[in-house]
Length: 276
Image (cartoon, rainbow, N blue to C red; front, top):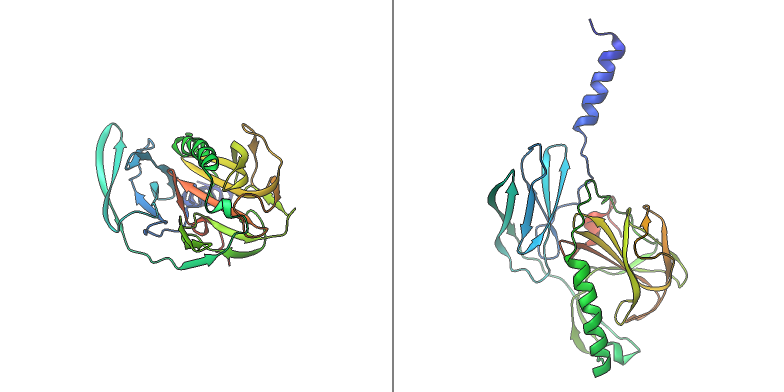
């Protein structure tokens, strides 16, 4: 006969086994959002692709879940998720609803950051190749830390997805969220990961790319100082540098981007508590 202690231990172990292995982001199946697709509860981790990009597959209390980043330019409607599960190929539909993002108008004092010179364009092209390489990487981390924390505490001044008019010219939508903080404010890792790139970029200024595994990457821009190096493994909350006003910036702030399967998605979906 089981003792009360053994019965209690069995109850506790059963409860722990039922808990999610990962804190999944909130789902928003819209352009710029995240779709969560259930893939069953087999013993082996399935693989999945959206378009030509491999997507994160995580385990929670109900089995395997594909975490699909949805590009801002994605057309609403039904799209296919390709899956390889125990050697068997299949597809699952991903239904995307429409979403309207507001228009934002602002000015940047440095006009070259809005209308680059021919020499600037050559630099931008070189930098874009480096960025594309980062987006294409897929590091097979078994349990990525994606219960993200806001990297710096401050007032949010720029929401994700805003359609932007800068100095009267239409430019790309806002691919992250902005946090208004003074120059020199500590900027911390949203989750544990590996630093894959640091440097001074034309638009992003001093930047840090942090790879959390499974195609999930966070980017920290416009820094005044960088305190980490490529290849360094950092813990959640570790200081990456200090906020600044470098690159294409209208004032001191931190720009924070979350990339999932190579595409920028709304960082708020990953925060344990929605940012205000």
